[in-house]
Length: 447
View 1 (cartoon, rainbow, N blue to C red):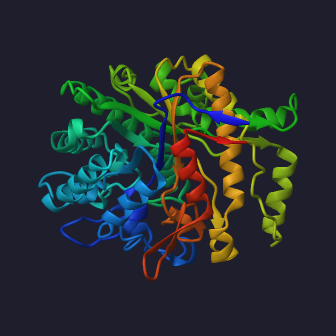
View 2: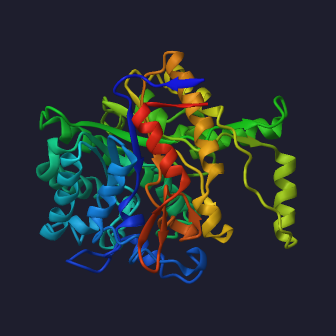
View 3: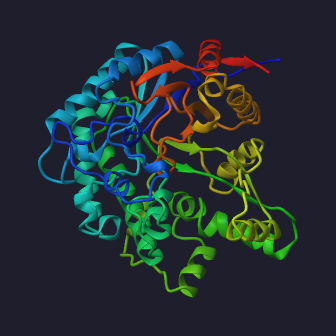
């Protein structure tokens, strides 16, 4: 059976500046928190660093050529704040502006719509030294940065995204395994409030330009948790906390419903974590958007008993592999939840979805990546079903164009359609690249 998607459906791939660009110390770019974090012993698997990454800073023509080979009609990338404003504020780095202008011009020349993220986790280190997102001044700093981007690229970008996966800031400030590597939940909760304010002010600024083409939205990932044993108090609580206290609920509620949820407010009060707010904050955060970006990878089943077994195995030095089983069917549930619970009445794009191969599996296994193809097919099956059920789903972006620096996993997790030879920076198309190029050109696929 051939699954045909709606006419004008967007097919794309996604990347992020810190993960592919490299050129970390060239042409006036400043340090980011990931440049510094990667230098901490043990912070990144196998000691990987983003200094060179995929060297896209120098190989941008080849990257756009790959996009053309794939037949995609949109490319999702991010700006490096440190390449635009090396100190986070102040003097603009014209070499950075020139790099992104070249990328956008190449995309336009090839009929590929730019989907540009303002912030994909790589805060300028100079701003982190001043408190980063924990300092309310970040709202002014981010708005200044957003203005530089909009002044220079404005209507040349079809889709603007303010933030990608804000939860990374929570993880980096509160859990320690993302940059900048802090373990302070109170600070993290305050930082998230300021981040949402940055988003709201950037949207307000965007509206003042009255662009004819450009649209603006935000990307929030949803890993929806479900109780493994419905009715079991422990499992039910695990799922609720994962969704509402430490997951998507802490963003979607203020963005689309207004204010923080009752569950989250109760958690703040019980644990002395209430962020400092000012009058009008939640009105600023809840700005009307043109689209919503959903990063979806899996649904997760919570079982308290199995979790204890897993933790015990880890403590005892066991080789417990906690890779979650695949639940692509959760996509359909998530999409309906966005409409039914959060009342989204704007277009939705799946802005990230993919499957990693471990570098240890070897080059040949990575190139013959049937497992990735089967996984993406299963996700697209439910995406197509969602469209049939009336969900306003307008596009799909596969993560990622090529193997790259996968944050704390370093270069061990390979998500790319193209295999990256990091010694030579050669990009080699995988089996999935050929398959995806057939999907994009046919606007669908054979199940």
